[in-house]
Image (cartoon, rainbow, N blue to C red; front, top):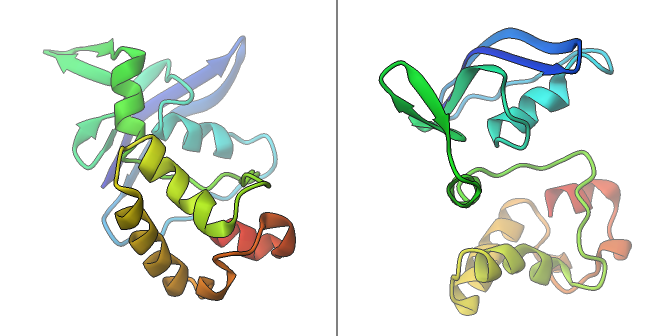
Amino acid sequence: MVEIRSVHKKFGSLEVLRGIDLSVRPGEVTVVLGPSGSGKSTLLRTINHLEKVDQGWISVDGTLVGYRRDGNKLYELREREVLRQRTKIGFVFQNFHLFPHLTVLENITEAPVSALGRPRKAAVAAAEKLLERVGLLDKATAYPAQLSGGQQQRV
């Protein structure tokens, strides 16, 4: 599902990622663990091409992320193509920043409706199933300030 091969990333003279190799198969749970400043967040950000790699490559579900291959050379995709790829890769960041003026259900349906053009009715039905799956269906009309941190993260 996720393949990371020989990934390097520098910020100035500080090399944060040094030849990272990682494979995560469908259904696997993987933990990235390390001290503060060891590159965990940078690695995760490279998976969605929020950070560009200096060397190596990353693929998700068999598709290169942020690049196309022509022979042995990689060429960076245009931002529009990268944005399209990002619609298929989900992340929950440490600071999940829900929209405080929207209910739980509205927060969940905003991206599928606005970014993916899904019909609102279908997005609501999918969101309700997801909320039921994580035990939060009863919080669908609540606002983020009314939720615990763990509940906000599940949203």
